[in-house]
Amino acid sequence: MDEKMKKIIERLCDKIDNDKLNEEFKLNELMESIKEKDKKYPRFKLCLTSDDIEELDLIEDKLKPEIFTDNELTPLEKLLLAILWKNGDYGKEEHIIKGIKYKSDDYNNKNGKFVFWNFGRYLNDKQLPIYDQHTKRAYIYLKQCSKTKESEVYTDYIKWFEDIISDFADNEREDAAYYLDSILFLYGKKLKKNK
Image (cartoon, rainbow, N blue to C red; front, side, top):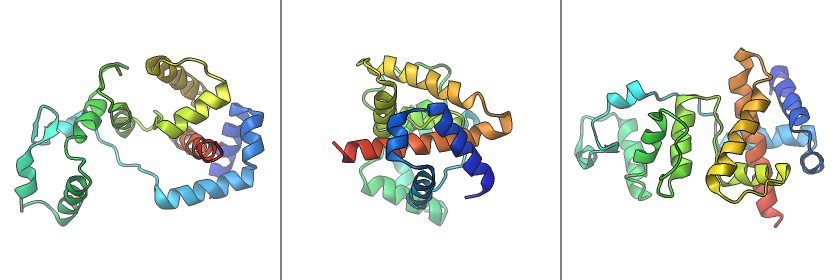
């Protein structure tokens, strides 16, 4: 990890400024944990926009079933579709696509696919968080959030997340968002393990 990334992580830890986090992770341990996480979950820098989605052949934001018989696809496309099919995940792309195409922070009526919808938002804007059970758990614990309604927790989380990364220079915000996500993901996993 280069010096620039180390400084960003140090600043993020200072901004989170929470004794609970500091008890669990010493800075060097945290950076090593991020390196390990990055081996399993390499940083996803690819971007998908609404324009990209318009180029796909979709039916109501879903891939057409005929795609599974298209031999004109690249080997990579075939491999990724095989994984989608084998895992029983065909259809989940709809929620990611809706997130990519979002026009506002309307996260209501996501039919239990909220994490996929939010990941779609992230694919379109790398300064947004990857919100999942681990980052949510870390946020609730660190901020002592007592709200129970998902939309309220999410709204507060987004504001808190944006407040933290807004103190970084424009050219550092994407990195700050990535490392803040990483810190919260690792902390949330640790909290679950320690239950």
